Length: 337
Image 1: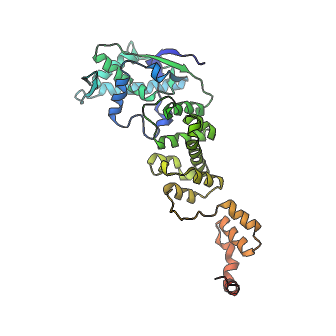
Image 2: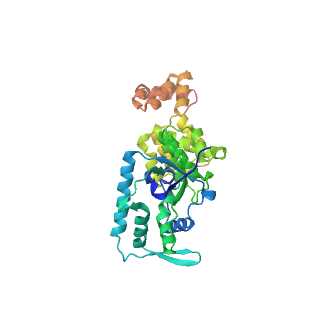
Image 3: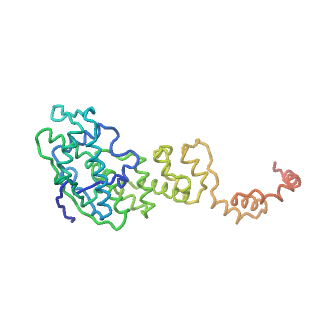
C-alpha cells in the first residue's frame, strides 16, 4: 500500500494544462462554483471524504515555470484595483466579504517567506478544483481570525509516462473518487483521445473511467480516438472542444465499424457532424466489402466499377462509358433496365 505523507500547500503547484479531465469545461462552470468549493475547503483537506492528493515530483525546469506563474499571480493580486467589487460568500449562516486585497495578503502569508516565493516541490495530479480554491478558502479563514489550513495529505508517485499520469487524473474526475463536478461527455472524449494518442488501450480507458461498468463508454471513446488517429486532418479534438460533435448522440458500433473498415475522411466527418440516421436509411458498402466483391465477382464490368470506387478514379470506367450503347442494348435484351 502506498504511503501517505503530509506536505504544506506551497509545496504543491497545479499545472492547468495537465488537468486533461477538465480540458473542455474548465475547473469551474461559473464563478460561484469556486466559492462553493472554497466553503467546502474552509475546515481544510477532508482526507476521510476525498482521500489523499496524488502528486509527482517537479523537475528543475518545472519548478522554474511554477515560480514564474506564481509570480504572475502575485503581481496580478498586488496590481488589482482596490475598488473592485468584493465577493460575498455565505458560510455558517453569515455573509463574509472577501476582496482581492484580502486574498493578496493571505497569498503572501502562505506562498512567500522573507519576501520571496517558496519554490514548489511537487505537481498536483489530482485535486485541481480544490487547489485553485485554496487561496479563497484560506482568506475566508483569515476573515474569521483563523490560521490557514495548509497541511496536505499526499501520495507521491513517479510516472514513467504522461499516459499513466493522465489515467490517475481522469480516474479521480470520472467518479471513482467521488469528484464534486462530474466530467462532461466532451471532457471524457477529449481526455480519452489524448490518452490513446499516448498509447492507451481500450482496457486502459475502461480502468481510467471507473472499471467494468464503463466498458461501453470505453469502447465508444476508443473508437472515436481511432477515427481521430486515422484522419488527423479532421481535427476531432478541436471539434470536441468547439462542441460541434455531440458525443452522447454517437453510436459506438457505428464508429467501431468505420474504424475497422477504414472509412473515408468524408464519411467519418459526415457521421460525426450528423450521427442521426433516417430509420430506413441503408448503410453504404464499406471498403473491405467492395474489395471482396471485386475479387470474387466473375463479371468484368463489376470488377471495373469496384476498382473505380476503390481508387476514386472514374477514368477506370472509360471503356465501359465509350461502349455504353452496346452494353445497354445487351442488358435490355436480358431484361435489365
